[in-house]
Every structure is written in structure tokens, then in C-alpha cells.
Image (tube, rainbow, N blue to C red; front, top):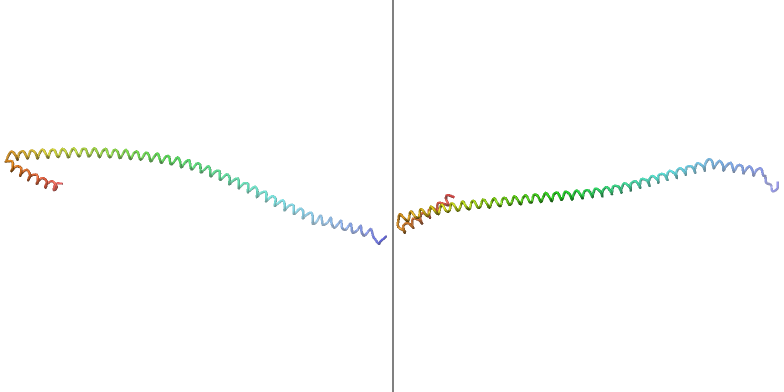
Length: 165
């Protein structure tokens, strides 16, 4: 053996080295790589699920926004219809109130006219009775005494009327 090289020793060392690498590969490298791949796949699945949930939440948010817009539109329509109904009802009540006011005014005018006619009739009767009385007094006595009696009678009547009222 030249240079003191033992080929058998080298081959045995190589064989030990191959066995060591094979054992390490099977016992350490493969399980660690398998564990890392599982871990990577687990986190990738979590990321995919999170993305799906975010997409679903965004879709739900858009759907809610769309429904809110629809409800706002419906609410605006209902509000407009209610305002129109209230306006019509208010106009109806105003016209009824105007008709009622016109009727009250007409009735009051009619009542005032009847009262006016009644007062005029009473005044005519009173004037007629005064004229008859004055004529009687004038015919019975002289004109001066009759005038004094007439005026005295008028004053008595005037003073009696406020007491009667």
C-alpha cells in the first residue's frame, strides 16, 4: 500500500457515511420536510379561508348597502305619498272650514237682518204709539200743555226703558 492508504478503511468510512446520511435523511430530513409542508399547507389553507371570508364579508357589505339604498328609496316614496295624502287631507279640511265659515257668516248676516227688521218693526210700533198718544194729548188740551205733557211722558219713558232692560 503505497502511502499507507487502506482502501478497505476508506470504503468502510464511505459506507458509514452513506448509512449515516441515509439514516439522517430518513429519520430527520424527511419528517422535518413533511412537517414543514403540512405547516405551510395549513397556513395556506388558513389564508385562503380568510380571503374567502373577507370576500364574503365584502359581498355581504355590498348587499347590505344595496338593500339600504332600496329601503331609502322605498322610504322616500312612502314619505312622498304620505305628504301628498296629508296635503290633500289638509286642503279638504281647509275647504270644509271655509265652507263652514261662509255658512256661519251667512247665518249671522241672516240673523242680523232678522234682528234689524225686528228692531225696525218695534221702533215703528213705538213711533206709531207715540204719535197716537201725542195726537190724543194735542186734541184734548191746548198745544202748550200738550207739548209739556208729551215731553214729560217722553222723559218718563226714556227713564223707564233703561230699568226694563
